[in-house]
Length: 199
Image (cartoon, rainbow, N blue to C red):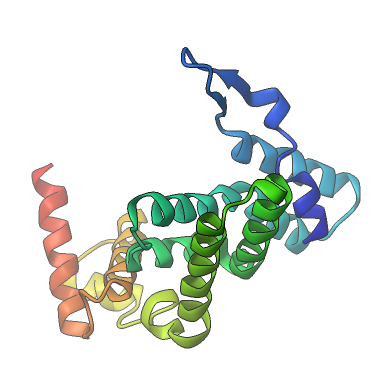
């Protein structure tokens, strides 16, 4: 966690740009920073698990701030889909990202941090943590309704990437409340297949 916190903005100087209005941007500093942090982790002979976790924290650290900005500016809470994808992409680093987001906000804004911004950040932290701890099977890791073999049998599919994509789409559908039974999962996948065939 300390390693990731130290490196999460390491690529800001290299990605700094100024637009025509004078606004400073740091495009892709999170993605490039994840690569730098990963390389440095290997230099320090960290384990693969440690490197993957550091990489995940650095790569996704801006998502907490995006949620906070949207809540503060537009009064829009993250959707169930956004919460699911946050924890899916973060994997085991989800809690780390929440803690880093709060610390980053305090560290960068210090005494200029407004009560509104801090309240929004705390609300985002609460929403994410409540879903993680209190509703894991609902929005974070829904129980599997069918496996790849069952899906291939139901839809007469050959093994391939499409099977994994359909299983992930089903799981996301569960997390958003659109799918709750095996039958609904199969019908959802069948509809997805029809859409792919007409594209």
